[in-house]
Image (cartoon, rainbow, N blue to C red; front, side, top):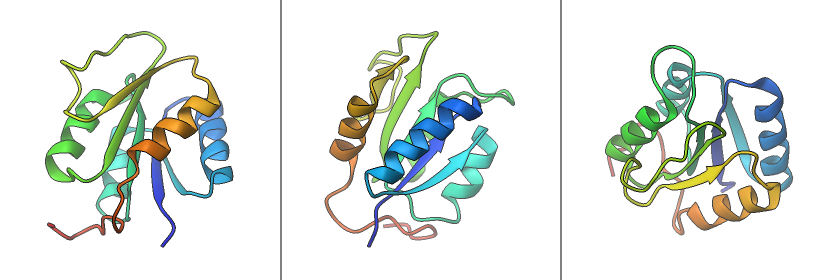
Length: 128
């Protein structure tokens, strides 16, 4: 089964580039422009890796989303990015990674590949 990545980025051009690179890498890619859109996708799709920006509209940050995902879907790999903040391991959920902006697209691909779970994809609605 094709592995899936959820890209959460409110800047459309940046999101488009990340989606394009990850699709070229062979992943099924879902897009969200806010944390609330991301939560809706997470509850209805199979996601293997979350790639989220820190700064998001609507009052919730990408770090909030990362913590939610780690708590509810611990098998999903998490990659967080920001051009404004340097987010340390003490702020991120265990196992999550930080990629500062502007990022090298090859490094994005590498991080996502390394965060991919080895087994089958997480299926939305399953608790294990």
